[in-house]
Length: 347
Ligand code: AQP
Image (cartoon, rainbow, N blue to C red; front, side):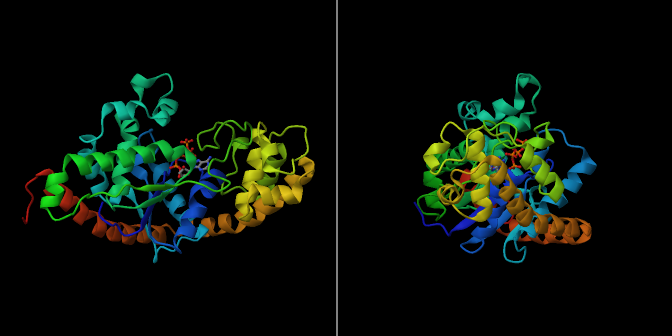
């Protein structure tokens, strides 16, 4: 396999209120990755429309996700911040990958099953094809690393399968065009930390999610201090005090979730948190969690508010980022077209 330059790609859908799960599982880690590699962070609006979106709200949400990226600490001069629909290579590569991916692979995707629910016949074709577009998002840049929450693990495995199959199916042509042994990297998912899967505050067995009908199930990045305090205080728990070791969280999903959130906000491990709070009652621990969450999220939400008040600035960031993203993706697509055997202008 050829050596690939370390490059990070990840995306967030502009489909509603961003929540603590999106922040701790993804965006906070995007910020940290900037120290270690070149990064591209994408507002994946093509993914968003796999479920119907109100057009005016979609536009607002694209700007809000961009604002959240910047407010959290992503520097749009250093990293490339853009929205997917401004870079046509994503959709173009997705079509080519549609012809590489197998129906059987997509039939196994659990996110489609969850989101389509019982009314599968009525789901959009785009929702079914979502993981193929995600593979195109990543591989248009030949990204080597993708920080995501645990819910995206299966999609990342599909990306690896598509890269592998493309490399194998076109091995001779890849070699003939001077690309060595493999054209696409086998991308590494970066899933980890204490908040890889933040759970609902109402039910520790369900993922914290934008689409949960109960607003009390999640902490939104735009929630004020009062709302954060109310939601944490009402969060479901069990009657036992906190254990002193992480093994004591087994079978206690709600306790595990609150300790994981605390650890991720503090940049510590569950063990370190339990060393401090083991034996404490939830009432005391929740008080400390409210304080930490408000202290972490208030500046973020204030900065988001400031940024969304200037949509022209956000749009300029996205236009600049899209241009820089396309400058990387366009030569990849040209090479893919040559490898596949298309005739293209200028050749
Ligand atoms: N609960 C979570 N814990 C940790 N990480 C999470 N992510 C999402 N939920 C959690 C991560 O956030 C990134 C962006 O997610 P997305 O908006 O692109 O997709 P999503 O998974 O559809 O988000 P939601 O909030 O769960 O929305 P719905 O309600 O539509 O299902 C990804 O890296 C994701 O892993």
